[in-house]
Length: 351
Ligand code: NAD
Ligand code: IPM
Ligand code: MN
Image (cartoon, rainbow, N blue to C red; front, top):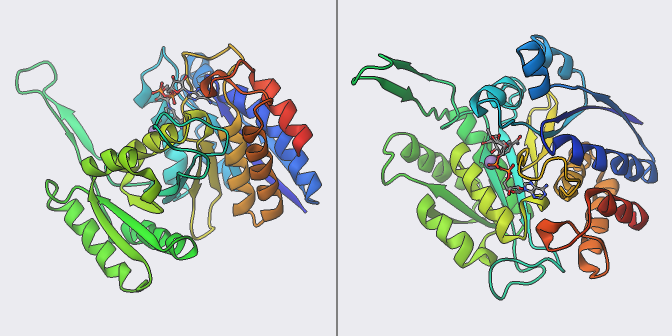
């Protein structure tokens, strides 16, 4: 079996972590008895600066036939973020209806959390983030620029189909895990969208009587993910709330450099995309110190999505084994002095 993977390294540390992780994914695939065929798309900010667009006009058409997409990161200090992200990553999530964004936060053995008293295994939750609508709907506008009455409108959109899709996916996951789901909301202030969101959670929960549902306002949830992260199992949140909470999830589990994610097209009509939660990290680009493990684990999520669980498990185990070993190389975000390449070289041996 050969899987055909689209690889978009993107910007900043994106190419660094992709170049490090990709050969390792090939190793894990070979060991599990299948092959990866990667097609590299050199799209991103360099292309924008040279040709005026992040990707070609038919970019998503070209991606469509692939079995999955592996993305590095997007964003460049010389180009406004709304230009780069709306030119490359966000259109892929939307065009391919990748409604379900799954982002696990795991504190591995051997990794130091900034939270006092937490050790390996104490934090293990997963955020289900609505991924194509909500606060990220590309609906709004600006008018009367330069006048005192200048205005900007940005509309949040919650559809029944989109909300049900993410909520149902979260309940399914809770059923397969510890049976606990936290609904993150802001229905005290957002009486249309978020009250609707809560109603959908309520409705869908009737299909899952064994799942215990907790409801938290997003401000309190931000606090509790730091105060009592060990109590969370599955968290479901809107697009923007999920974005914010998963950076909290990443850092309480040790580093942005460890957090993977999956953007899933649930019906399987289009390819799903796998990418680290972190961005292009211009502050460390070119230094060879970016942590590649978030990308490696995103590759593991890609394998699970393809049904290749043995390869996925092998990657998770190798990462866990490395992090638990005090003598293994680690990058500076984890308190080490190792480089990106040292980490993957060690990981290849463990695999
Ligand atoms: P960031 O995630 O790039 O960086 C935040 C901090 O985490 C920085 O200190 C960085 O050095 C550190 N960090 C991130 N990844 C790391 C890794 N693998 N190893 C070690 N340290 C790591 O967030 P930012 O600085 O807010 O954004 C930078 C750019 O990336 C912006 O243009 C932003 O829009 C973009 N961005 C893109 C994505 C994406 O492509 N999925 C995600 C987030 C941000
Ligand atoms: C993420 C990123 C993106 C998001 C940005 C870069 C648009 O922060 O994947 O978490 O908000 O979805
Ligand atoms: Mn983010």
